[in-house]
Image (cartoon, rainbow, N blue to C red):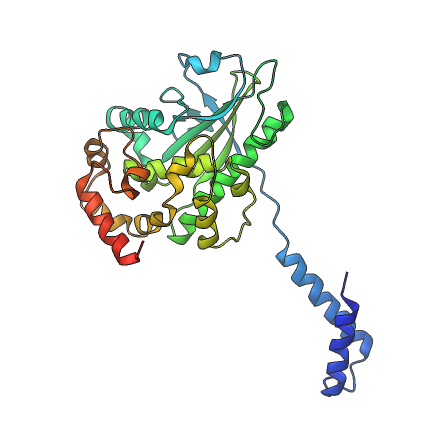
Length: 310
């Protein structure tokens, strides 16, 4: 609805300033003004999310996680291949913690097919249970609720990742629905991003953390055009029972890391970065707290943080 009182004030102002021309009547001016207001409101309305494309999954039949009967809304991750004729292949078993995933990812980077190194490719899985549905953080429980919550959570994680990618003009990570034949209780999504995210344990750890933060309601409620400052303040204030808050206390230090990634890892290869950081726990939190085993990277990163005043 158009605010009539404001419209009347505007018309009065036009008359006083001789803005109404001889050949332009009041009705025409009102119509133009109303159309302009409607167009402005339409352009500011939130855009509808695009329907996600789907890929098919060739899963590891030896992965015992798929045999668990009870529901679990916690994210599990596994390295995967790039799509080939619309099909992705699970490379390692699922892990419910980022450290476990990092160990599997390191093994895939250093010992498996080199094609895996070209893109950052990860599947994210939850088990909604066979008979009794696990209660979600939002309080809901049921098959439809789980489907909606999983997509909302993955989209929120994607929005975080894309925000920092846009800031640095990188290729944007994409999110896919995963079709599979494992069973209806399994809900799986697939993230594929640029090679840079997996270039070192610190960046890969941050990529995984951003995905997992998408489960948080305050992250899901962020506006699509939220500023970097607002996003970092929201991330830094995340309260969680799964220890995420320990990893987000120094979120403001992510910017010197992301903005100066080329200088931080200058002259190093992907393989070198993963060999130097031999511990699965050596990720973004270790780096931002000054405790990374990669002493060269730590020293350079500290210098950029000092320049940024964080």
